[in-house]
Amino acid sequence: MKKYFLIVALLAPLMSVTAIAGCVADVPPKLPDGNTVTEDEMRESVRAIRSYITKNEAYLACLDKDTRSSHWKTNTKHYNAMVDEMKRVGASFNTELKLFKLRQ
Image 1 (tube, rainbow, N blue to C red):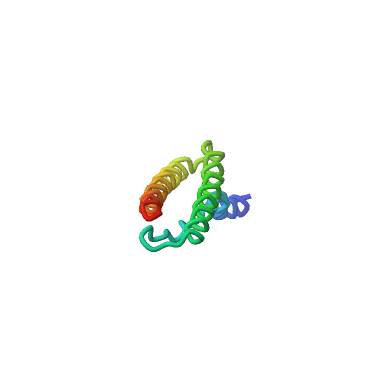
Image 2 (cartoon, rainbow, N blue to C red):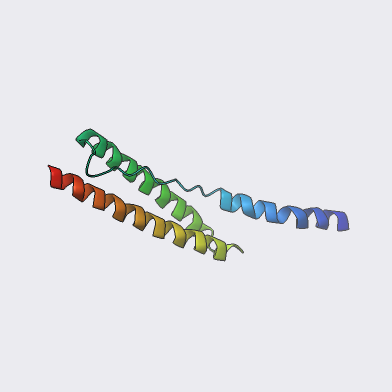
């Protein structure tokens, strides 16, 4: 019985990492330079940004599902960091988009 408890105790942290690792975040796409980007490149950048947002909304939903677990503090930290990153990426992209539109 002690042997079984020891195995469970040793594997429990690994199982929790897997649960958190099951939520996969996307990396931000390379942002265009609004001063030099072509119209086709800007369209592709818009698609990349939308994909990034969609994938990370799924990541946030995944973290949100696990809020009742013992890892809620870790999940909350990752959740908030992703929200901050998405805001930063969105603001940076909007700046480049405005520069692009000024050239049109």
